[in-house]
Length: 507
Image (cartoon, rainbow, N blue to C red; front, side, top):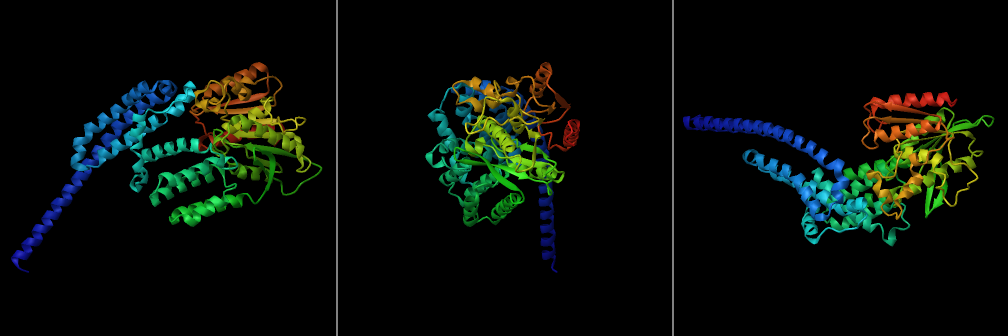
């Protein structure tokens, strides 16, 4: 090897060494800078949470001008923070700050986008965004067809909000009157209008179909799923949807499915899990499940495992389908009627399924717990087709993190937004319906429930005690809303339920 070649090799190696050393140092600096940035942003996010979320009703009640000023005041600390770090990141990662600013823009524009809906919720006044504001928001439309943005949560959140509002208008069209899955149909009809990029279009079709199967099940989805599997080019999407659909369809095959009510064109199902052997001389107690989901979503399949477990113990396990806001465009008023109809149906058909009508237990989580309570309390709220000679009240009630008040609650404003008389909500609001002589109840609630305030559960229990009703109220200290699901507390919930059933001779 000549000296010149040797020197070139040495020089090249040295240059590469310097490059890798500098790269490593730059990466360390970038990582350190991001940690510092994330820590500062975490502080700002915490401050935003305190300033915004508890005060949303007041903020959205402002007129547009004051509302925009308020939103801008909440946004500015985040923009100032990006300015503070911009110079440093420019040398290390020139795309970092622009990407952060875009996410911040989308987050706060989502808040602005929601203004007409929440302003009406909190004030009763219908408004539209001014043309200048709407024009600013419309500048985001081209991003809908940029596949590289599908990984950014705030961009997707904005698009979800956009489609939510558009679908609320879309679903009012006559073509959806006979739809059994109204909101999904509306989403799928809107997507081709706003998404021309194949990758983006398929992402959102998959997104809403996945969510629907997960949250509402597969009833009457055969045509929609078949079309998706034929037209979609993304094999991973197709595999997931096909697997979910098949699993759900199979879960519906191993038990009885009966229509307990036909209303507004919907056939509502009751899923019945019977014991393997039926002793006609000894009737079976019944465990009836009402799924939770804020009256907007809910899937009878969520209770299939529990229903089957009770059937193996000699019970009749039952899971009830009821009307939901994001499937049937209804409110809890309809859901309450459905819950009461289902209990009546079980009493009417007791002989057919060897049911002990003196031992019907109803159970539910969250909104499902609310429905359980209203089967015993909302005596004035019945379907016209119901046979009122049959009692809609179960013999025992089990409520996990239930909803006890639907009146003067900002989180449930959507329920009464179209009612001239908002006080009608009291007709299905458990705490406003309490009376003496109620069946035994088990009420379990966590102190850290941020979906349904613990204080509302405690107030309900105190009123129950004043009336002398037979009930147990159990507080789970530190427990969140999903006490039936959280492993830290689900065991205790199960233990309390078993003890309560045993107390009344059901176990």
